[in-house]
Length: 354
Picture 1: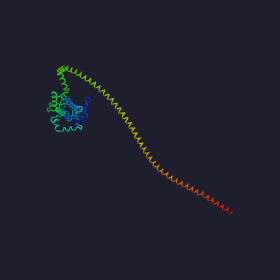
Picture 2: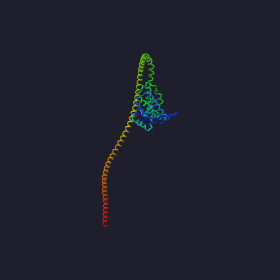
Picture 3: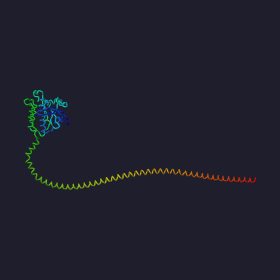
Picture 4: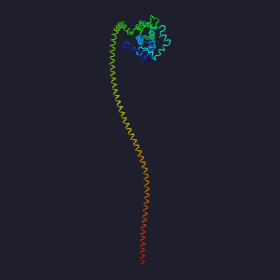
């Protein structure tokens, strides 16, 4: 509900007997939000916060030459992450909200001493009043576990009263007086009650334990024997399960090897099938080329068959030409014979003339 934030706080650096303030950025929750979010607190932590708050004011006065802090209230106190107490640096700009809150009437009525009751020569009165009101706010808003004792409640109530009362005779004058009156954070009451219980209850508890111890030892012995037998049976069952698991592991290993071999065989078969498909494709291509070649050859054969027929017809014409030649030769043969006859006739004529 109230997330941690980083605030600018005053850190007091001690060196030997000197002390000087320094600014630091610390994550934490403001006191008002811390007690609202976690109202249940240990008594030791509450008393520790009350004492640390007084120590912070005392260191501030020492470093500032008794100048008062002036605005001590639940908005100006930071609870750090490690449960420590620190005062906000009111001069830082990021902490202006503290001064704005102090302008509210409700805050002034509860945490600012009325002016009429301020003594000019006692500057610590402002911080004493704010301290008493802040302690009163813490005790009113937390549930202390374990509860405060009567003595602790009485001492805290007296501190608050003497810080906030109007009677000058009863008022605290310095913070040193507050430190003396604060109750000391002792060990937890739970530890105290344990010690008291040990003194009172040990005899009765010892008697009860001694009475019950015998029966418990016998029962424990019987239980031990029963558990031992059960463990023995369980060990045998575990051994059988282990052997069964080993057999199953071996069978699984064999199956894995067989599966690996089967995958390798499938890979080889796939490669062979791919080769067969490639070869089939090649055969198809060769068959296709052969079919095309045969078709071309068939077409060329038909053309050659037509050419011999033409050649035969040409041969017949050539045969006729020799025959005509022969006939011409015969005619030529007859022509000489006629010439011879004519020559002979001429000779006869000449003979006759003679």
